[in-house]
Image (cartoon, rainbow, N blue to C red):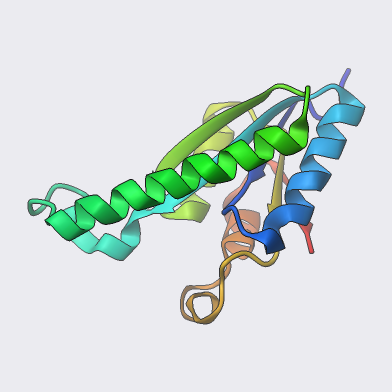
Length: 146
């Protein structure tokens, strides 16, 4: 029996998140685990417009396109770092901590690997870190990497 059959790496594409990505890849490689990489576009910054309560503005559509490009670029970085290890990549939209936990539960993830420092800054002070929220919300094991 494998300790972790399925491992999820939550990434925001930042250099500060790279240690978590590398650690998740190393564990998956060592244990022969299935590996998933998830990037969550934080749509909460757009308010109700994204949820369909009002029509999206041109600026919002452009912003979402830019964020989708950033997500794909970030997930491509994970694939490159993983080398020959297969990685299923997924772009999600919503509140990062909630979407990570929902994905983990829906896909039977045994271990979530997440960094302590991402893009953070003042946003972390205002809303709390994604890692902290994932730890509190998740029923999966969570490895937080500095």
